[in-house]
Image (tube, rainbow, N blue to C red; front, side, top):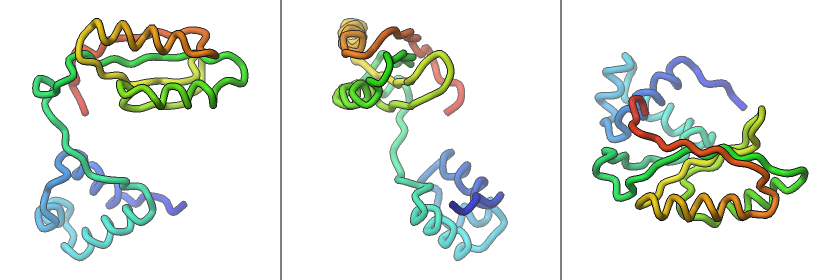
Length: 143
């Protein structure tokens, strides 16, 4: 895979800040031509580095009021089964494999604490889940 250039990194950072920034404004901010910005965006998209653009909403505007990170330990060779089961839970926004003491990290969002409790019970009830530790996210200081 082709490495990211400094320009690619700066462009991605600018798009993370505001994915709706016009190409002309990006070009001015990055000190390059609009054509260069367009070509870099097309290249990053074609290479699968940029996989899409989305909307971010303020935390208080989000319908889901409870957000959490759940660290999950998996028994033996049950990883594929556990991942398959977790993918079926709509409350899981993202699921990551990791190293260290935990095997998976799940980003959760729930409407309320009752829903949150039910999701934790479902996660802990999946065959192959040995242990979990979950922390509520109180506020986001950097996104």
